[in-house]
Length: 162
Image (cartoon, rainbow, N blue to C red; front, side):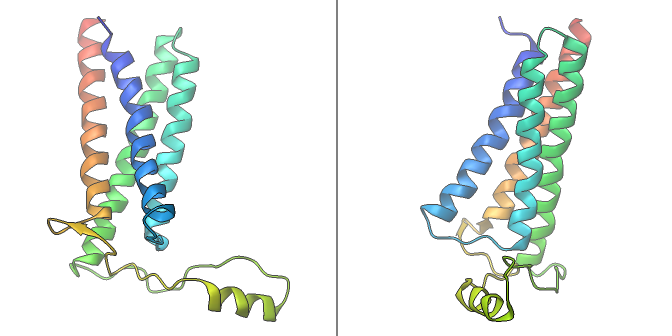
């Protein structure tokens, strides 16, 4: 039987990997370009994957592995919180960011203008895709919080059995 810590470590790796895979799949296969807040949701998942991989590397040292899984779960929850904020902007519950995203760097003003004109315009307050009224940001929030809570529950159970 697998220990609760091992199960938590697996969720801490797989949940952000699957969510990032979905994000990149929707971008590169589905043609849905990310807005600024979409990018913000990806960064904590990337950190969570790195932390979970470190936790696997230190699986022989349960105290360190547990600490890294906790940090990964916090990163996953942060992505979920950003997803809640982004979904709230999409549903017009509150106002989102009002500045433009920074585009690619350019060597000259002409290159910068060409890059700006070629870049797709993606608004953070307009969901590009929904299912049953839930946007990708909303799904990220739901799945991220579910994963973080599952990790915390497993770690609490592990603490009781240790």
